[in-house]
Image 1 (cartoon, rainbow, N blue to C red):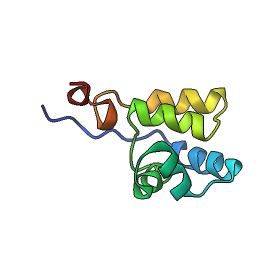
Image 2 (spheres, helix red, strand yellow):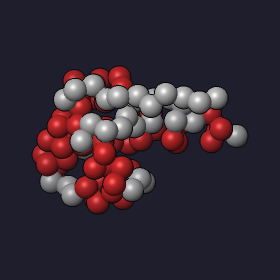
Image 3 (tube, rainbow, N blue to C red):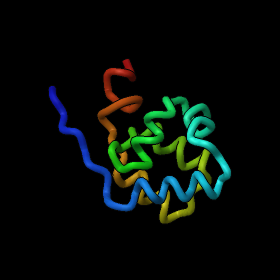
Image 4 (cartoon, rainbow, N blue to C red):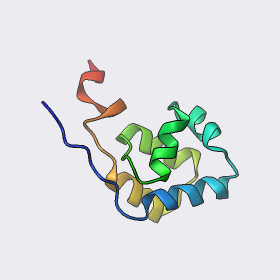
Amino acid sequence: MIRERRTPPEGLGPMLRRARDRAGLAQSAVALAVGVQRAFINKLEHSERCPSLLVAAALCEVLALDEDEVAALLGCAVDDAGRSHPARAA
């Protein structure tokens, strides 16, 4: 099965960047805490990628996102890619 890459909603990247700045964390610190590469955090902040559900949930916790931010991030998260890919559960 080939899946289509999803485009994040406009404003998601800047929202993540503001949240990271508010938390006083560098991209590398967020990446380490979430368990992804720093380059992936950069792609998220530049609205180039959507996170998996598991990564999105970890970002919500690490960045202490507010209710609206959580809804925006989880709303674009994918459940069939990355750490949330069904093959990883096996």
